[in-house]
Image 1 (cartoon, helix red, strand yellow):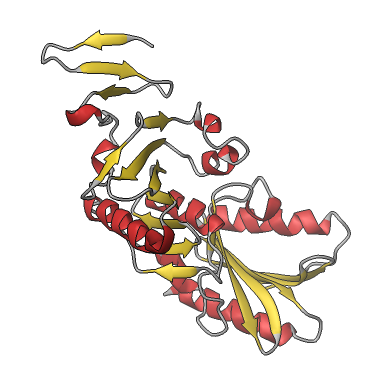
Image 2 (cartoon, helix red, strand yellow; image 1 turned 45 degrees about the horizontal axis):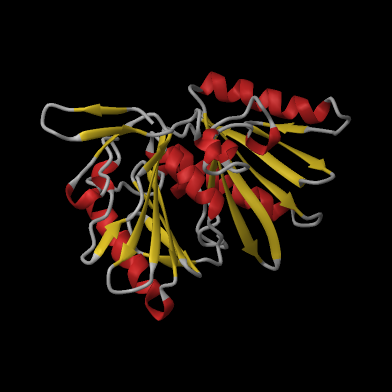
Length: 303
């Protein structure tokens, strides 16, 4: 490990992630990373190990096997700090992921939450599971893990989450395009953002999905914002062409189309301005339901 002495008497430690960590008061490490100011400060808790940092090239060293998911959302930087409570045996790890943009942060957050999770009003939104609390705030995705906290685990997690959230000046909100999904039958917190390979197609990017339960049926809605109306039209033709070349009959209509797929069941697709949108997994005999929801999405997008 390389050491370099500064003029003011601090010692810089170059750690594996590639950024500098100056020694702070009491021997704790305060990162020189841009994320260091977001590290929580909680009374009677202290950082017990060197703060660690990771970039796109080294993220796999920390979350091997899961790094690709974060990289697909254009991950920028991660800072990790471990804390101990001076009056308890509890240990808490704080991970702060900088995803570069609010939308990318929502994307990875939405990929890891579940509709049945226990949600909390922290940042834009948080969810808590046994020993963990994860939340979305602006372009950041924060993950907290507490060990040996006993009955105070939830209290400790909320203290740390609150401290970090307070340091983020602009926590933002959910993507505005989510409002285009009809509320009726919407499965709460099922909305997701997929940045690349949307629905398994390399030519589809930046897509949103939402799940529905209506009249005893389950189906999905989706929408994509293209660069222009022409781009959306070309995207739709390529999407429909993919199914047509596989032998499916595509019934094209003014502004949209309908076809039936083995896995996606009845699919309804339309273009609304510079958006491509659709409804999938509609059962046979429920085509009117699919048309109703597609019409609602198109109407919302045109407003």
